[in-house]
Length: 112
Image: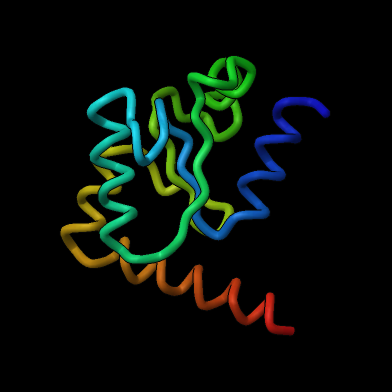
């Protein structure tokens, strides 16, 4: 499967996904660490892709949504941004609202 198609599938098949350096348990950069912690603070499950373990994704993800840096957070298939935007959304309460709405919507889909 083409790497962009694989990324698209990951983004569309997960209500919340972060592309990061490392994992939420063992982040490999400060920005990824802070972003994963912000998502964890929302209390919803989220998927992650360690871009350091997948060189194809590392090289091509910036082309997917025209966003040049890592981490990248997607909620309901939409890029919300990187570390700064995620932290701003956490502070304003919007990140939790978005995460809760995505989780609720996906739970309803799973139930039907």
